[in-house]
Figure (cartoon, rainbow, N blue to C red):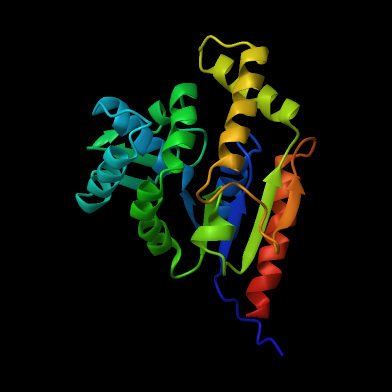
Length: 240
């Protein structure tokens, strides 16, 4: 019988690009009083660092060495920061001391992140960093393989999705709001390419964990989604 005390748990949120994971994860973390880790930001930062090096996204050996260096020398730092830029994730991402929270959200870097994340050596370099962030519980982790690879034993798993058309529309409106040139057609094509890259990569492909709760955000209010998900987490907390 429960004593009423709650145990902080690990919440994994996976899903395709544009499903609203960053927004939902941030608001869910705030609702629960949990820490937040946008793991996709790690791969985006590696992709950006590769551009600046410069290192080609199709050079796995060099990318692996770069990722290991970013972690070992703490050149890449992710901090929770209220009001931080970067897709509303509530996190500040530093690369060599520079806030790159906005820079890593560009369409080119997004596509590069898919290429980079398919490199086994890069994933290995970042895996311990991700697990260390969530080891103690009380954290919301958002990405594409959190519930299947990073924390397969997470106490609560969600798979957040939406139709490709809705996801493309959201991304297009986001780009326009940022003052960037974009069309819905090219954005939709980018979404399709990203989905293909994420689901077909040989290492840790995007897939729904067998025990994940599917949440379709296509035509639902964010506040409603977050409250529904928070109730699931709180029930798991009480279950101990």
